[in-house]
Image 1 (spheres, rainbow, N blue to C red):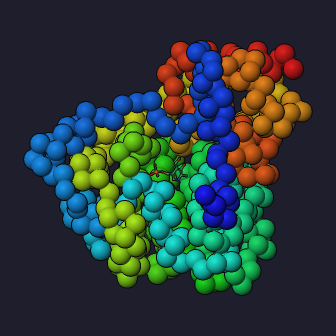
Image 2: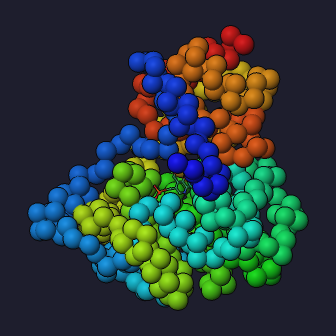
Length: 381
Ligand SMILES: Cc1ncc(COP(=O)(O)O)c(C=O)c1O
């Protein structure tokens, strides 16, 4: 069987590879996956069970069930004060499918997409899947904020999209309003589309996140959301895409041909979640806020490791360059010696090879244990 060039262009993520290797040990502390260990809240699960009992188990409209589209629109309309309706929203199989479809909507071969780094690996990979070229804007200022001058210098006449992700995976940074406005202004000036990945929206600890939808040239903005992280629903696979109705209408046609629709019971579960955000999302956020403190405290005297306090998400992005090891070697050796799995910074762009990412999706005892092992490992170098 001769595989396509496209199939060869996608590499497995380094975090997953490390995790495969970790399976040979039975006492691994796994900081790799952005997948909360907290179970999906009972009320959300009940909504899915109810839907199944009521035989809401058939195909749904391709764009999603109407009450969920309406609820997402209402939720975003409250945050942004924009007059959004169900027609601005399509429900997808996680944000991943939403992002893929939206790239497909705009990209022709050889077009370029500037992704503000560091970035989760699936984003550039999905650009590659569309036959286009990802360009990582990987120069940043204090606090992992993008260097806007550098961003501007990367724009060519093939640039179609700029992708921004705030709150950010892997740094946990919330971009301030001025930064987002500068990016939006640049996109507007150059007639480039702005994609805003906002899947960590309610996991903001120190200040509220701001949606780019707030002030933008709306015709050129596409926003992505997801139930995965904020409601601990990674396996349910429900996300959404928000944009102008003409864009959403055509995107739904593509979705219909690719996957038909997102799972029906999962959509009813997501409806329960979105209509009770305070009840479900806030306790989850508070759990991660407390875990952030536990991890920061447990790691605070670790030599040769520098990190900022993440303002959001459940990730800590730590600079390990003082150890003299590149991120892959650091992660391999840490796994072999101490049975701790962390994600190499290289997964988020070449410029981040001096970093590692720790997901604090673990309970306090495990966080303490993992931090102690990391410290022991670095001290042994
Ligand atoms: C920044 C970012 N966007 C999107 C996703 C994908 O989310 P979903 O589970 O909704 O596909 C992830 C998952 O890790 C992510 O970190």
